[in-house]
Structures are given as C-alpha cells and as structure tokens.
Length: 390
Picture 1 (cartoon, rainbow, N blue to C red):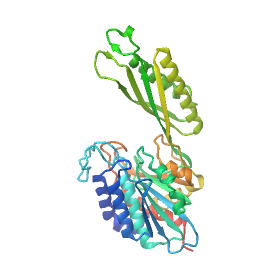
Picture 2 (picture 1 turned 90 degrees about the horizontal axis):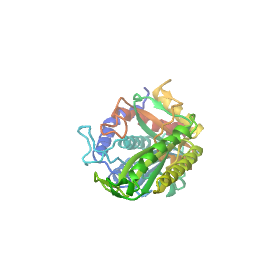
Picture 3 (picture 1 turned 135 degrees about the vertical axis):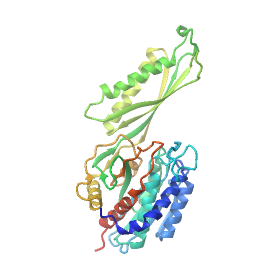
Picture 4 (picture 1 turned 180 degrees about the horizontal axis):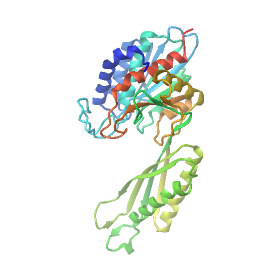
C-alpha cells in the first residue's frame, strides 16, 4: 500500500495524540481541551493562520503552499466531539470520564488531520492553500452548521471541502464512496400526548395515554411499509416512551414519544413528515386524547458532488491500490452534519476501513490506530493532487 513514508515515522506520535484525546472525551460544543490541543499543535507546526472559536469552539488552520498562484483553497474537515456512552473497552487509554467516550472515532479523525497538517506544513508541496477544519458538536449539535453560519467558507476562501469517516467492517486500507446521497437526513420527532389520568382499576373513567401511544407507535410503522415507494429509503424509529409517572396502578395523564426519521430525498422527507402529522392527529382524536407533534428537520442529506466524489475515489485508489475503493457503496441511513458544509461548497465524504472492530456508537468500539498512515496519506495526497506545483 503506497502510503507516504513520512507517516510511518509519525505513526507513534500521532497515535499518542489520538489516545490522549480518547482518554479525555468531551461532548458537543464543550470541547475546550481538545480544541486547545488542536490549536496549539497547528501553531507548533507553523500554520500560516490559526483561528479559534469558529462555530463556538471550532478551530481552522490555514496552510499556504510553496506557490499560491492557482488561488485554490481546499478544506479538509475532522470532528472532535465524543458521545455520552460508558466505555467498556478496558484499554489502557480508555476514557477517564465516566459516561463519556469516543465511540465514533472522532479522536482518530482529529489525530489524522493533525498528522496531515504537520506534513503539509513541513513540505508545502502544493500550489494554493489548505484549510484544516476541526469541528465540534457533530453528534447532534450541528457544529458543521454553526461553522458555516459563522462565515468560515468565505473567511478562508474555501472552494471545495472534503470529509472522511472510519467504517468498521471495511478492511484497513480500503475506502468506500459514492456520488450523490451518501448519508441520510436526520429529523427529530417528539409527540406529547395528553389524556385523562386516573386509577388503573377504573380505565373507563380515563383516557389512557399509554394505549394511545401504543396505537400511535404501531401506526407510525405503516408510514415506511405502506406509504413510501419500496425503491426509496426511509426509516421511522420511535426510541423513547416516557410517562408522567411510574406507578403500577396509575394511568398517566401524559405520555411523550421521541424518535427519529431518516430519508435520502426531500420528496420522501416531505411525504413522511406529512403522514406522521396525520397519524398523530387522528389517532389521538380517535381515543378522545390530545396530541402535539414537534417535528424538527435537523441534519440534511449528505450529498457528494459528482466530480469531487470521483476525484476523492481516484486519490484513495492511489493509496489503496486498484480494486480497493468501492466507488458506489450503498448509502447509509446514519447522518452527518458535514452535510451543511456540502450544501455550502462542492465536495465529498469518504469512508476508510476500520477493520474488524465493534461498530460505532458501541461501548466496545475503539478507533483502529493502524488506519492512521492510510488516513493521513489520503489527506496529504488529496491536497497535493488537487493543487499540484507546476
């Protein structure tokens, strides 16, 4: 595998950065320690500009090439935040913060982009500039949206933007990508049901909110099964049911349902939202209850532009070798707020293999450090290939 030799030398150092970040996970926008480490290292590497506090706690470093006549600026993005999960790996570098862990590999993404930044600042073998983007709050907070709304793209003149995420189950050294929809839109659903509480032995004197909730949950499964074209993709998952109390003999006055909707197109998203609203309204009405639906469109579809997806696949193949890049991987129904950056600029998200590891968002997951030279090489070659020195 033709990774860049320099990353073999840097591998132990980058691994140490990754494991330190892993041991000290931070959530959402509260990534002050991680962002501080990132900013300090970017300055140590000699980046031409290092700006903190973009999108609240994001960091951007700008590295100019040995030539800048092309006027090109490419953005590379990594995410920094962890998840509210209790780690169960038992590793020496396991989380030191109970109830928090890097269960999605953002520690690895950050470390790999730092490694690439160190190399690019050393060599500057490109014509233009690269913006290395370190983003907070990917796990539900919309940090990508915040950085874009903070004017990041215009401030640094970013013309194209690229992201990378590890993929458990895909062998180390392999990549996967597709043009068009790569990951799903993620919407939030909250349903507040109000009935008439009372004694469980007198249900005829009550309006049973738990019964309403049960019928509603069952009916909501018909949205995908009987409304969405089977050729299209959609998911409706109700993941939480919370009553006003937990007594064994009380019919609760209120019940709250929470869940998520995943779609790959605006048309299906509109259809699903409309059907959910109708089911909520009419199911509650049929039982004499009241229901309020709060439907929030959160992350949009992650859409790779065609030219940038093909370019990213070519760069990945130069590292992985022929036949080791899946150029038409099936879309995932997981979501990514890199989607906000792709709505702002052309670009592409690519998956890199994490090997035979636990899945992301699992308490036994750990980023595979063998991926580091592969990911760093991809970032570096992407820049050098996109902006060659003539």
